[in-house]
Length: 102
Image 1 (cartoon, rainbow, N blue to C red):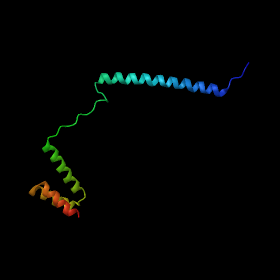
Image 2 (cartoon, rainbow, N blue to C red; image 1 turned 30 degrees about the vertical axis):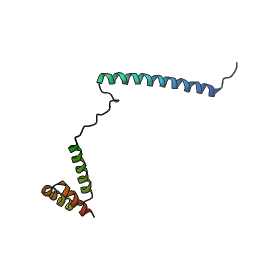
Image 3 (cartoon, helix red, strand yellow; image 1 turned 120 degrees about the vertical axis):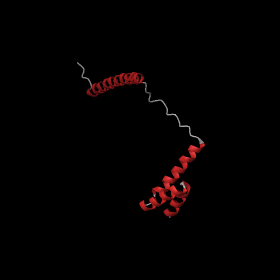
């Protein structure tokens, strides 16, 4: 009776385990696809870009500049800039905040 190589047996066992694992992943994939179709939500859908008018885009840009300049200021300076904003507007507040940041 010939003796079998123990390493060959281990390799066969590992190969069989990988086949079982691959089969489990295939069934999991089909189950997830079915659940996705039931829920109606698709992970592949892309989010629609918001359509902004030119005025909205400008307002967002100014808001970003204002928030960026306010970020580096101390609380007392922020309060002063907020007063300027209410009195004279955002552009004046940005200019004042830039002067204070120096």
